[in-house]
Length: 307
Image (cartoon, rainbow, N blue to C red; front, top):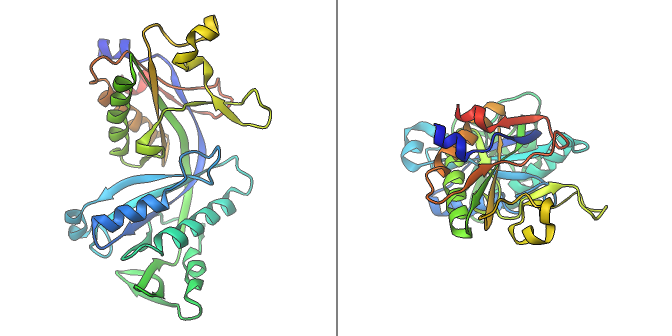
């Protein structure tokens, strides 16, 4: 543990509150399930310029599905869609996000079905809205023990739940991995991302779960809300001089971002990610990004989660 605390900065990741919806997508096989998930979570890495942040909470294998883990006994994926609480009309915004992604990316994918995964009140009546695509041929029915809508399609029929819940969540958990070169930093981040994604209730949203372009809040351009974190860019060390925060010997820094159902999930994901990344030979340091409370009030203290 002493070696681990020496590798890990005594700092914190600064997250912020969100609201999120969670759906279960099933498909005939893994091929079409992965096609659907890739489409439904597309362009959803960061709310800086995306309509939401989306990722897979967990995958359900064919064996698990046959044992009852999905309503229809088929392989599935639980997907989260997060919107920051500070977004104006956040509930309407989240409903629009889910309506667009379910109707345009799940309905359109061969063999898929879509089930609600959050039993909450309030909820969105998304089933009825998506079902309008049926052009008055849609109908309500109960299938697989679920009340929902059936939409006739060229491929057969599409089934989805009537109601979709939403609740408070957390966004912005993060970790930084300092390596002497890109390969070592990336290897550590890959290990960390896999461990975070395997944590119950946690999603990563960037490609492969990793962001090579970690940002800071604000910019020298007054029309931008975020920009590259210049003080942590290795190639700017000499140019910035004393303002640079990149330690000597560091040639690359990779970041993972985590969203989750609550602070406890984020803490668990952070711990699992740190323990996995720490096994990377040559890794120089593990740290996290924070902005002194300017961005959010949900803090994940690194030394606390590994204690």
